[in-house]
Image (cartoon, rainbow, N blue to C red; front, side):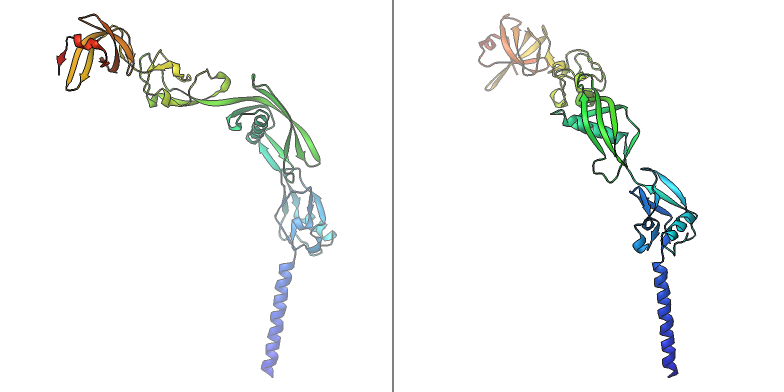
Length: 327
């Protein structure tokens, strides 16, 4: 009988302890920091386990995107006055309240302008627009509950001068606020240029070429974007560094100069004849130029095959009269 009574007593103690733990868990606890998107801070924002009193307003929030400190005793006192009788400071001296906001910096603002300009100018990729803001706040704070914090209303842009004015509205705490952005926007293109100067006759290599990004209006006609079109070719004139490269600036390497003494080759089955001649024109590999036989003084066409060497067309009878030697 005694053992039975002891078991009952122990059970009652355990039940009481569990009840105390449950009560402790359900007791409202003051938070040290509060984050809110609303203009009002409620009991539920400050205290966990606030129950049905959670929506009750206690304070006005700080301005959008700012923070403020509230004495913990003041919070507890107002919460108790509002009906949360167990509210206390929980050992805190103050509570920090953060008011959320959609924050846009200058880069993000420039991105919005870039998008707005490209949408109003068919064929322009926004990634190719370089935007420089001249009149713009360092940042814009907008209501975080609004899907589009900044709405573009009107755009004025002269593509000739690059100057633009963008008229917009910002979603703020109570309605909207006007925002005017001005600056310069230019469409940029990538072209190839020289990393270092080239002299006339120099052969262009891949290491001589760099990619540069320039305003489209400053890029001369015929400027190239792909170096494959000119690598391995010869500069027609002296060329300066960092200037856009055009196809007309280069030619195939000249292998034979005008008035140069050259070797003429004629091949036929089982025989190869060579002779000397004078080039009447300059030529690159594959060019057909006129040559003059040094003995007969006859002029015939020939194809440039290498430096100082040409090949006479097999149909040309001049070969028969060349002073040739068999190799």
